[in-house]
Length: 119
Image 1 (cartoon, rainbow, N blue to C red):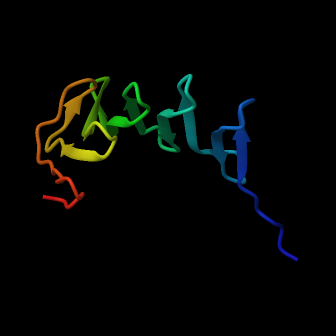
Image 2: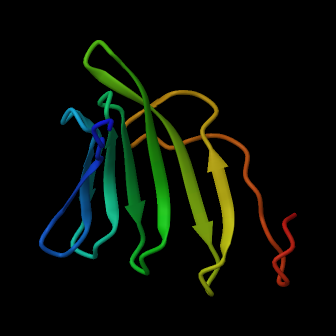
Image 3: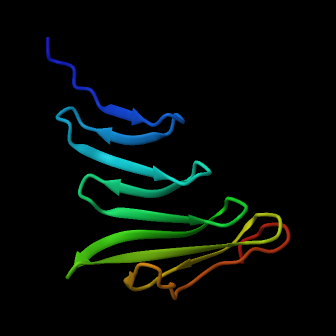
């Protein structure tokens, strides 16, 4: 009978997923959280990271996807999110080019009207 291969899942004291490892012990994914329990950093098995930022209401306002490292600088593809007063997503702007950490994207977005029809 073939040996059963198991994926390992590690959790912190708050019960949040912190790491996923393959049967050989190699890390497939790692997660870091802020004080509100939201994922602020995610790293894949190749070391590429995705960073997340949230507003005071806990809504995700920024996502930075690491696309490559060059001369000790990590380049990111950035997505910025905007919301109306009710917390409905009204904007999603994609950076069209590579940016360094904390630079703002320039790109296209979308909006929605009062009945949430995407415009």
